[in-house]
Length: 562
Image (cartoon, rainbow, N blue to C red; front, side, top):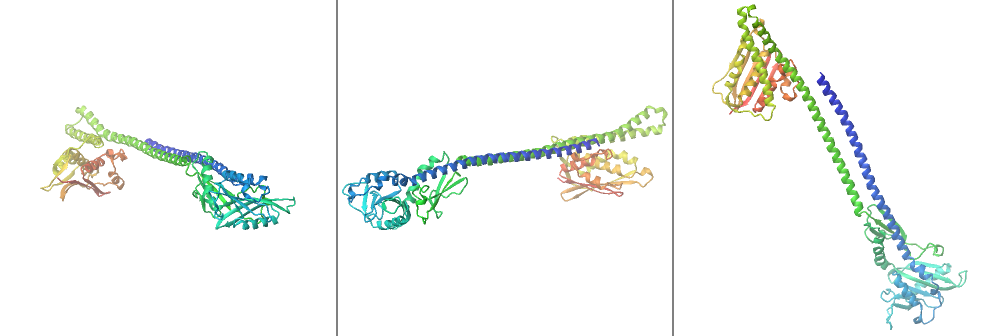
């Protein structure tokens, strides 16, 4: 009872401990997951912040360069000087060459005094516009100057419309010789009321060249400097969401900046721009999704979480296995306690009888000679019972020790039965129990360990004698039948009695392994049928037990023949 309580207490304690440990592991796993993800998010946030700064630096560099020509050149009063009739002596040529060298996007500069004066265009000799007429230069000059080219009238009319509105700046997109252009010009007036035009100076920007060359050059130059050491993907998209530069990578973290495709500074000249102007809105995208630091953070986070998960699973499995081991040890201790209690009870009975018989023999003078002659038989019977219990204990130690092997050899089944019945002759004679042995001739041999198989048969016969009705009680003599038969490759040995039978609960216990038996002091040590079942199974045979309470029990051993 105490052992059962200890086992139950151990089971409850381990269950509570298992739950607490699993809760702790779950909390640790959740904490590790949160910490790992926070670290990963921190790295991603820092890279995203750095990407935002890179986008700001790039857009600042682009904007400053795009408004440079207007801010530093058109604001110069030298462009407003009266122009002589002969363009060959213009001092402005040197200024134009310097501007071309500093800013790549202006394709041509132009000036106009208004009225009937002509409009002069200055272009790079190495990059003439498609609308510029080709002329043979007497002197090799980097600048080509043309007075009133074919497209000058188109530009002049757009300028005059802005002059009519008294605006200081002219900005418009147009198509010249089939090529899209943006034209930027500054208008100066003679009077403060802006009623009389003094001069116009400006430049043209080839938007096709800007799309293919300008932004690619400036982003290639500025991108690595602004990245701060990150591996970034820079993409430039036009107003139709078409990629102008780079690849359109939407993977986070990403910074996006929008800007107008306007080659002038509109912050302080907004009131002097045409009210109907429509500017193209382009977008700059900067992504660091391929940065090794970010990829490493993702990999390390996933690896850390995987390692934590594997460790938690291994720990949980280890805890379950440890619990099973402890519970098995507790059950084994309980089984040993019951086993010792049961065997002690069975050993005390023959020992007490032997002690009583010995005491009676010591008082030989006080007993009759007839009674004296019966005592030695009783001592022999009790000694036989005690010997069988010892054999069962030795067999238990043998069949549960994996280092012990059986000594198999061909044996006659009838010989095994005869060896088992020899030790019960006195017992069935005293109890008036009839033994019927049916042994046909020409039986095949079986492969068996003689000592182990005889012990198994003794246990079955002893159980039959134990449960048989004794004829000494005045009732009808009981009968035990032992029969041998052969069916194909199997030899069967049957032990049948007409005793009180075995209950279904005890019958189910016959099929249990020895290690899981629940021994009790009233079942003859609890070893007989279990040992017989184990021995027969080790021989590759079968043990079938059929019983009915009040009718009897029939045990059938099946052994393979040689």
